[in-house]
Image (cartoon, rainbow, N blue to C red; front, top):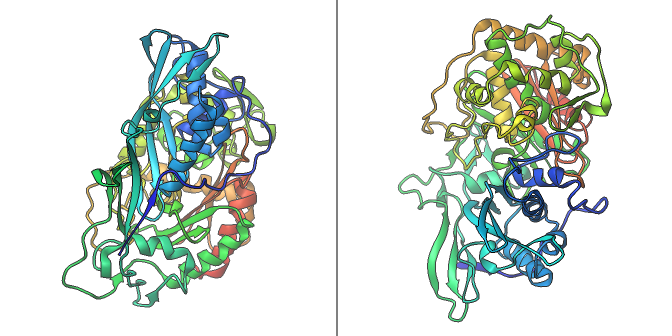
Length: 542
C-alpha cells in the first residue's frame, strides 16, 4: 500500500519568536542560517557584495534565511506577493514532510532590466527518508522606492514548480527492520524509542531494507506522474531474512536515551563510538521520532571545532601550548568577534586559550594558516568531507574555503560555513585522541572508501593534554570528578538573531568518544555537559 502527501498543505510548527527580525541592519546574522549557522556575535558579510547592489544581495540572503528558519511570514514579506508566497512556502515544506531546509546562497548575477539573480542550493530533509538536494534561482527586482524585493514566482521555490505541475511525496510502506546490538540483544523502537529513525534507515540484511519513497513531479489536473525528482531507499534485501546485526551496545544506548532527559525538552542528539575502530555504540535523538539529526543533521560545531584548528596549528609548529596568545574581549576582522560572556584573559597561553575556549585568541592566529588549510587538515587527517559509508544515510561534513577574511576568522572557531553533526564530532574526537581516523560504522562490513593520514604522536599528546586540562580547570569542569581520565572540549555555536546558541560538548574516556549538541542550549557546558555527565555516570569505564 502506498501513501502520499500533496503540496500544498498545512504548515509546520514554527519556533517561538523572541522579537522582530532586523531586516537589513542584522541581515548578515540572519543570513547565516541559510549558510548553516551564524558565526559569532555581531554582524558580518557572507560573500563579496562589492559588485551587485549590497541591499539586493542582503534581501535575497535574508529571504533564504527566513525560509530556512521557518519564519515564513517574514520570508513572504520580502517578496512582491506576500500572501501567495507564504501559502506556497508553507505548503511546500509541510506537504512534502520537509524538516528544517538548508538553503545556501551562491554568487549573485546581474541580469539587466533592474533584475538581480541569486542562485542557491537547497537541501531538503524529507522526514524518515533522506535529503532532497537541488538548485534554484531567486530573482530580485528594484521597486519604485528604491528597495529590493524577491520577484515572486513559483519557479523560485523549485525550477519545475509551476501553475500546471506540482510535487507529491510518495511513501511505500515496508516491514519494520529487525535489528540486534553487538551482542545479539534485540533492538526495537519500543525498548529504545530514540532508535526509531535509525532503525527505519538501516540498509542491508534486514526485512524490507528500510523505508522507501520518492518526490514526484505530477500534473495538477490529472495527478499523473511527469517525472521522479528524488528517490529514497533501496530494494528489498534478498535471501537473508534474519535481523541486522549492528555495532550498537544496548547498555550504552539505554544510558544515552536517559541522558538526553537532561536536555530539558530541547532538541538534542548524541553519538558515542569506539575510538579504536569507529564502531558506533549509541545514537540518540530527542525528540525520538522524525529526523535523525545525530547522523544527518547539519550544524555549526562551534568551539568543539577547535580540535581541528588546534591540530592544524600544531602540525606546522605555528603555536605551542605554552606560547602566549593574548585573549582580548573583542577582535575585529570585518566584524566584531567576542568571547562567550565577553570574557578576556590577558597574556594567556595557548593552553589557557583552549581550556577557556577563547575565540579571539584562535582568530588572531588565522594568518598562520592558508585559506584552504583548515579544510585540508580536516579532510586529510580527520576524514571530514570524504564520503562515509556508515550503514545509514549520513552527512559527512563540509569545510569550504573561506570567501573572505571574516569567514576565515569564523571558520577558526567552527562557525561561518563549517558544518558538522554529533557523528562527525565524535569521530573528530576519536581521531584527535588516537591519531588515527576510523570510518564510523553502524553495521559491520560497510564499504570504506576513505583515505587519511595519521596525526603525529606529538600532536596527539598535545591534544590529549589540552582536552584533559579543559576538564580539570577549564570550561568542561562539569565532567570533573567522574571516574577515569576524561578529556573534553565545549562549544557554543550561534544560529540566528532570534534563536539562542546551540550548546556542544565532546569528550573521551577509555576507548569511547562522545559528542552531544543541544539546540538552543545557550552554552556547551551548561546544556550538553549534564547530558554527557549523565551518560558517563551510567556506564562503566572501558
